[in-house]
Length: 255
Length: 240
Figure 1 (cartoon, rainbow over the protein chains, first blue to last red):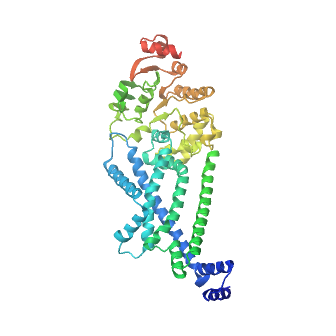
Figure 2: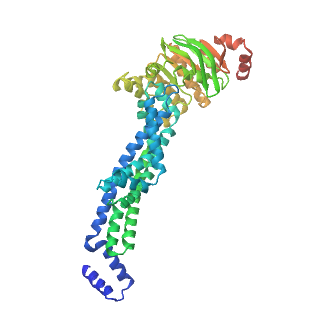
């Protein structure tokens, strides 16, 4: 195959006419096989998945904390407001407003060039930014889920003498998870695709790999279409897994 | 047992309870009746602070529960509550519904609570539902479980907030039977209800509430047979 590529390449450079399939072969070979370039894509996919997973974990942790603070603040008994909770709620509100109110791309550039301007680990800075960004959206998703649980459930828990934290942990959160899952899955998919943005600050994920390759071969179509297919495949696998998880959780309703 | 003094409750500008003073004695069965919107449920929910009173005090066995320094969870552990819409926890089995609070509050060990749950389920004749989920039960069964769940905490008083209002008519009887049994065992009970038959049969005292006041109260025979107040008369004429 390598031989065929070399022959055809020489032919093309020499001004010879190639058929459609021959051109296709040359470009495809250039984009994926020559100099073991597929390895670069593979590494890109690996980084993309790791970045997604880390950002997701960070996002869910941040989101859960913010959502719990905001819900707890809103559910305080009148006349018994906790000033610490009030302060935390203010911080949480500012966080959500700022993150949701500014473009992700701008956040990435600020993190990379202003806040962590001395850091060379662009992928890590990108992951951190994605996680912080995702946290704001996840917070609102979780808050919505917690609020969707019938008010009577909390009342029943409290009337039995359970405290607020116990009622949340055993009664409200388990029920909220089911309501949250579809929206959270959606956020997960968005996050996976948004990892491509960290290329702008030099994060070495899948899009970065494709760029590196077409900057060398001057042939953009195949690397770009190639990674588009890879993203699509990843998202399909992810949605399939999420669908499975959802179906399993829903089985509880029919018991 | 429960002493209510000058209780007022307003939701924003809407004053629901205007000035309620009342005392509930140990072992007493108090039934609260009245037209909808008269504040019956709000009054009951104030008794275990599910609603925070705007002013006034509520004292439970010598402890002022309206005092912000009072540990309200400890107080609520001694007051069972049954809701109109059951509010069973759909994510747990029936047994778990019953044992959750006793175990988590440290009242019982899991094994002990399980045993207690089975004893209580036998009482309401639902032993076979121990491992079922709430959604598999009928309304009447759910409410019987809700009563048992509250009883598992071994409360000193039981508060019932229209326990039969959300039930199909043929299921009202089975729930009232459990409540009657409970009454016969000497439980202190405060019951908000539209079941006049129950009020007459079980109540030691009936409170008639309207427009945020307790308009009239008496033993059931007197209140139903010989109402004094105009408001009571017109209400009873409509429901009886």
